[in-house]
Image: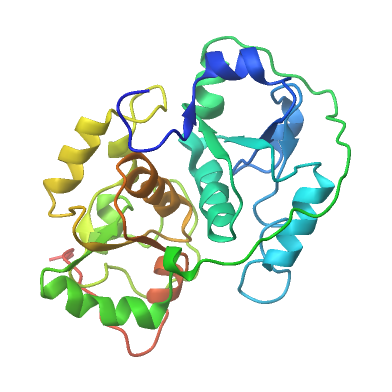
Length: 288
């Protein structure tokens, strides 16, 4: 579209033309899990990021085998192209994209601009149920731990950042980064005990990567945005937010659109770090 490193975006025009093609599978993933039922692109299946992707008991994702079965139930085969889209400028579509990639799913794309752009253009949304033809489990899935960061790894990464060989990207709002609040504006508290950010992290809010219509900025604009904060392609990068949906958006920008070779998403993010014993924080906000 605009000189990105990988061919991972499709336009709303493309979806309108190709949504019903053989081998194209549309999947909607929204923060508001009821939004799909109020209207979705004809033919799109629904993935619930909580019920479908999270383990129901453990603070963990479903296994690769369970994801394989889920995709099979949705009628997705390894030869299909999966086009993801959703609300919030594709936060949760990016989250699903990262999780699918982490587990080895191939042929993934995101509809640039998501529901926001599709609706703004006056395109059709339907409440008709999407009929899927279940198939065999999606084959060959296995986790790629090069794409996911864990708490102890992040703790060790702080020294890599200090040595100039790594970068930490905090994609939350400036008030969350400073420690003034522990949640997004207009969102409830989620039980995090401490505010602030991981030492050495750079504040690059996720929304700086998007245009007003929800589409991604050009590669040149994105490159300038991150390089201005010292987040360059020669460094090992870890992105985080609160529960990893916004950092998945930034992970997508860095790895898929800009082609950075080493980018991990810290899915524990601030809900884990801010409650952990024995990990450092920095806080720039003061009530004085």
